[in-house]
Amino acid sequence: MYTGEKVKLRAYRREDVALAQQYLNDAETKRFLMPGVPYPFTLEEENKWFENISSHKDIYSFAVETIAEGKYIGGCGVNGLDWKNSVATVGIFIGDKNYWGKGYGTDAMKVLLKFIFEQMNINKVKLFVYSFNERAVKSYEKCGFVREGVLKQEIFRDGKYNDEYVMAILKEEYFQQKFI
Picture (cartoon, rainbow, N blue to C red):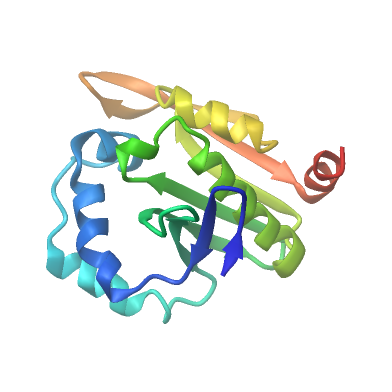
């Protein structure tokens, strides 16, 4: 378990699965996360995901839990690792809308970065975010991520084509900002 100011990252539990399914099936949450046609996840699919999370080498999935209430509110983790080049690809979602825009996602990402840079010894962390997810972009910038590229008109959402940003932070940048 890894702890920040507002949240802790912990292993997923079986009791999180139904709520994870509910969070991920929310239309607004799905809009920010899924590139494909926004089709609902079944409870069976979520249970299969839960059963397989520990068997995936190089994938580290954490439940995000509030410190104050001990409530599961979302998830984050390392979705891909390139050990040779020391690059991790991460993702995050806060599914409980009561916690949107209040710093919980930023805190969770900071805890995840600490885990990656200080425990895994990775040199670069990157992520992908849709251009219309302005709240997430601001959160990532607060964590030290910078835009490295734009995938133009990468995603069709809400009747139009939208860009997707590639954002990243290097280990040296993380340690420079951490001790300021």
